[in-house]
Length: 221
Image (cartoon, rainbow, N blue to C red; front, side):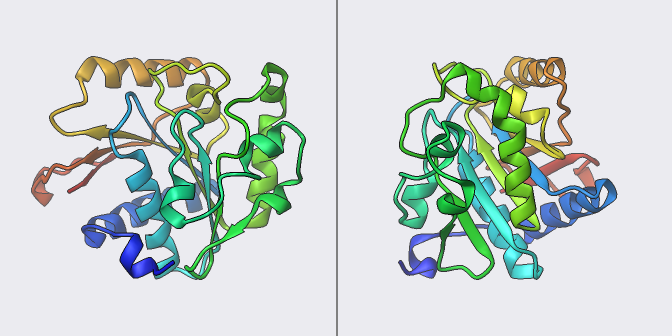
């Protein structure tokens, strides 16, 4: 795979700004884990997760792990030209060890764990989710997760609201001119009920002048 050809990045200045805000909070918490989720589908979670990961490895010496927990519509394997098998669902279903799921990329200091062989996980597996995430944390400096949409149900999926409660930072991606206010409020409510907290909202595909950017809101064109 030719990374400069197959993986496109947009407005890296904006991702650098997001990186600085997120990094500051990660350091404050002495944390490692970042979750990107959204209320609905096709709002740009994958795009944001990939570009944030690439920005980290470009601007810091940190080792980054990108994890596809969007079992409803996994995309990371396709983007990086990797096999989907031997991934998250294989780990959680106790088929392989997490080290056997780590996949290298053409980008230094970036590894990927794909969604895995199975289309879902058994109910009992949720009890082990915290331990799986802790294993991920031990292997690298930063772990970036992409989850399924919060408001779109899918049997056997990893509940993004529950997942948010295990994260140091949760970023909610919204798409300009598509995401509805009620969906954002409902997503926030479900995350709070699960014990998580949204750190910031990333607005995708909208330009806002710098003087109008408010603290805690990250806008990316």
